[in-house]
Image 1: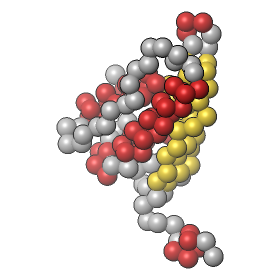
Image 2: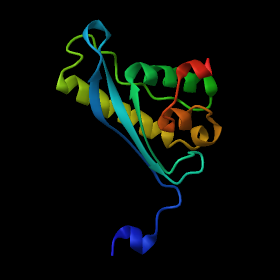
Image 3: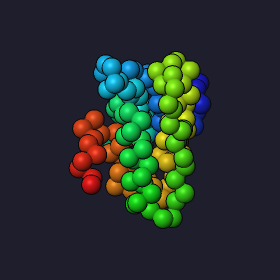
Length: 134
């Protein structure tokens, strides 16, 4: 028997993964975007499972939006901006891991789960658009 069969799914179950980075565009307009996979049964999230793609500048916007939304929660830093070798495997992997850590912390925070209007949308909505929140 697996642990899940033995104990059932935990009451508050949340898994957030950042994976599958891809380089988009060409020339000076190139950027990397990342897949955000979310599996959860927490009511704050509309979908039990979701997969969306976001780029680093989306995360920057999201972090600023969270800071505007709440003064009660200390929002963690994002991995820093990179100016050289932006598209090297090593840089992309380091950034991917940092973005994943960032999302796991904010998505797992009870005050953000209940109080944030942006959290679920950013993590789950494929039609997310920063312009809708300004």
